[in-house]
Amino acid sequence: MKPHRSIGILDSSTSKKRTHVGKQVFNHSLSASRRTSHEATAMPLGIPACQTGFRMVIKYYVSMWLEKISCTKILVFFILGLLCQQVSAQQLEGNVDFHGFADNREYGASDRYPQTIFGARITPEVGLLVDGVHRIRAGVSYLHEFGTKNILKPVRPVAYYNYMDKGFDFKIGMFPRHEYLDEYPKAILSDTIGYYQPNIEGMLVRYSNENFHQQLWIDWNSRQTRVDREQFMVGLSGNVHLGSLFYVKHFAALWHNAGVMADQSDPDDHIRDNGAASLHLGMDLSDKNWLDSINVNVGGIINYDRLRNVYDWQTPKGFISELYVEHSRFFVRNTFYTGQSLSIPYGDVFYTSKQYNRLDVGWVPLRNKNLEGRFTAGFHFSEGVMDNQQQFILRYNIGGKLRK
Image (cartoon, rainbow, N blue to C red):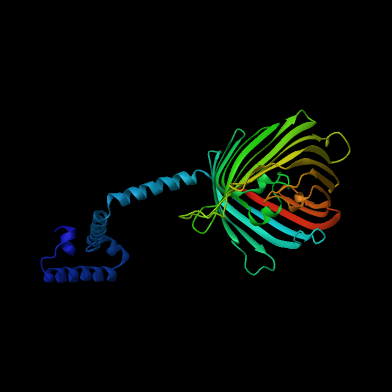
């Protein structure tokens, strides 16, 4: 008698046979339990039959399950397995950026919108580094402005691809802007942008080495719909070191502001193209004296602006200079502008004056590899009056490998 026939799992001809076989197996098991362990080992009646039957049950249900699974599902499982194996072989990494800011602007003397901007932003990211040059990151950027009941878009997504190798740096997606655009003169991009628009949403390509860097970027601010306007900004900037002392740097940006999508254009709504460019020649004397840092540069700035079908290109321009001195974490920065009134929507409002001087005196109480806390007392001289500003900025960046 075959084992599976004695149990009757696959033989369903009559219920009587299944009942008879079940009693037989039960009697064998009961008698075996009453014997000694030696006798139970020597009397395998019924036990091998049960084990063999259990194997047959497993094989039966597995075969039924495989028949129901399509080839597509099997292929999906196979691909997922390969992906998991590939991911486990790469570098999992993360990064957390904290940005705290307290900016009190007493601009009442010149009637330039006095306000206090006080809040914090945290941006956690996690991603993969593949082959040391390809990086994919995802995260969120969360802003809480203290005392504000309704914050417009407090959470912004962060998701981008980054290629970095041999001086080339390419990004596409939504990625933090401060690493690339903080060097821009405030006449072109004010520091207010960093509080509320922390990301570039677009693309950036950059090449750099010890004496040279250039970057080109596009930031898509708003997609055109029947409600929203089309807005984007493109920029170009760079720096060239001429030996150990002199350098040349340049900055440019163009903002495009078009109307909403409409079946018929609004005759009172016009497309605006506005931007600015500046060129600076400077000297870095930090290694030539007892000061920690001394840097001076002079240059020119031009503003280009047109409102289509209203006025053609207008190009106000002026002279701009900057001096920065630091020693023992105390610093002085002075920026001077003279020329025509500039109209740059994303620039600092003080450059609408024909002559403007900004004096910053500050202290850096916190400075480490990934941490800096900077206090600044600013004094703005324009149109015969003085405004003042107190600002504390703290940025802490924590990043590294999570696992191999």
